[in-house]
Length: 153
Image (cartoon, rainbow, N blue to C red):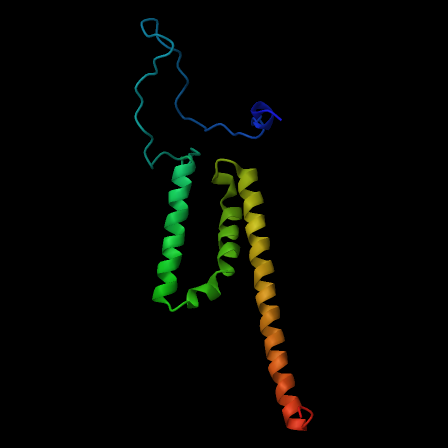
């Protein structure tokens, strides 16, 4: 399989254009076609525009992962590891945020898919933890019952 066969191009149905309030202008006669007119960056006051809030490459994502893991390590030290009990709720909460705000994202279908995957993973982990707690309580109750009835000897 060559490198070109592994490259996936997005079709027009996968990419939504950024709506713009300015009319498209063609280059003036004095200006070459390759030179773009000088445009000001969009201000946060521009309403109705869908913009990517994070543009980056692999190194930017690695730095973002370092930030997240550093904050998690810091929180675990500050809270004496009790922050880990809240971790299964994090993908559920972030997944709900992703579902609610999917229409404002750059790729709404991808955002919804990733949000549902995060919600499902969080629910599965939460159910596994709750089952382990229930089995632990049942085991302790069984040991107490057997000790009380004398069947533990």
